Image (cartoon, rainbow, N blue to C red; front, side, top):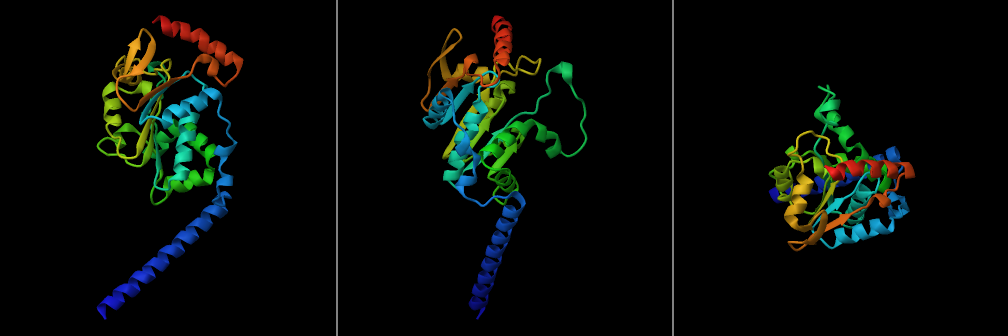
Length: 268
């Protein structure tokens, strides 16, 4: 008799769970206008440039990929486009974007900001979130940010140290602002069935502290370097791709700005 009651209770709980999932799904559809088919996802409308396609190939063929680019080349789009396709193909896959919150140099400190930690961090991940919303839908992103399994996560390094990250696309953004030791600790998080994409712009080091050169330090550890040129990797399953100024997809005037400032940067 006792076992019958247990089975009955289990059936009721399963039915209740299915009812909740159905109600939750319908709520998401109504709120965000999303019907759950791949045709609704925006990644299909993005046409990657030849350089971006080559970059994605490097990501596909390696476990860790370092991507260097100046502003506007689309390195974040490459990483998130690849992550999106994997995310939609494998329902167990997660997208984790890690970035350290940085003020724009000591000359532009904003001081104390009120509100919760989530609200303080949100501006630092706004661009990545907007890209994901374009590649998926706003509703899909919101649902999976706050869903039971939290398949999409935006984290700062402090919240990820000590964990092992399995079944994920781990994107380390603005890696040039990281301390080399933090970069090491983040790369040590890579677990089974996880790819790591490290994004950085060597010209955008927002801190006056010279020890925040995690991207440059890591590249020198993983690759043979000839002058300023990154040669072959020292270890297997490590990839590298660099976008040139001409790959910038913004206006021609932005290319001129990048060229002007790259002279100063390269001379230092």
